[in-house]
Picture (cartoon, rainbow, N blue to C red):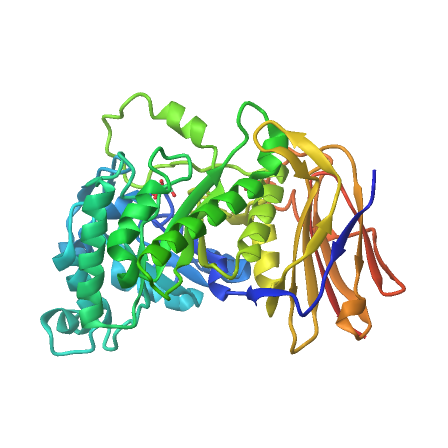
Length: 505
Ligand code: AHR
């Protein structure tokens, strides 16, 4: 195997690491909320009914931001159902996931959970069945200090101070025909701009996110963004992007290169947004909120959906994908792509946090455990510090069905100018062979040594973590990593994700 090399220079920065890159997502869907974050009868439940085992794992994961309450769920959600005495809250149909919502958890409970978890909340507004007035109402409940009817209602319900939420999503996936209250780009663009203007009249410095396409394969992709932004460009700060990846027809080579698609997706949205900005002669540059991304075995889910259900269960098991080693390597690669675009992608949410396509799994009344994909997320969130560096990667390529020739390695690096640490994140997509990598470090001036190095790889790529064997797949100290004459050398196992932190001295 030809060796690969990675050029780094502390002067060649992309942008500071945005802590909001390490966001997650809690939707009222399946068992994400009920028996996920909340289970009052669980042995670890605290006085508010939150599972402390899940809270501890959420903190360990390094999550900084959590999008709530949906997802498709939000497009039929009445936020008022979830406030006030729990006994008075109505049970409603959730049309998005064909289940019943008890409303036992609503805004106040979730904000209490977020406080315990130490995360910022990104609140999604219902622009499916509702509009400007309900958006203003929920904003008033959340953020207005006092004296108004809804601020006083919040205070009566036990929260004196406003929650001070900064980020609001103007709806969810409004381009998708599956969305309750689906809209054309024109209809949505008008509603988004009017909602944004009204919210800004209430609180000017909110950070508002317009819905981009629900995926880059949507027939209206890019045209949707262009038309929505023709209306809303000056009124919003972000345009959203959503992407889910899975192996198609057993094509692992393309699956391992999912980050190539994510790179292209981000570049396309940036180009579209910037072209609208240019047409509008605007000096403003929109950011991307990549507020749903993950590996999701979506085709299996869609196949199961073909027979319409007549049942209305509460918190059923929905898309509880069990992730393997390859999935974790792909997730590590997607985090590399997100970091690489830190100049424009300044918020991102892995979908979702618990049970529903999630890094954390639970059993009702039973244990909580880390799925394989937990590990690259937790290590990246902990180790990516300071600035993202623009790297020069020289690597052999391989052929993929979906993307043509693709580099065998993908990498990004961060540099903390204050402490001096440099961290390299790298994926080896070769399915059978290790790839040697060298990283000259002379540009950093002071000598560096390896402080820690972790690799996620396994002889059995289909290995998973389960309730019975929760630590079957974990990162191991990277074996073959050394420094010689100011050059870092590492041998990266086949299908692996590696993080190497270097420090001064
Ligand atoms: O995360 C699962 C679902 O995927 C969300 O509800 C929706 O927004 C997306 O299609």
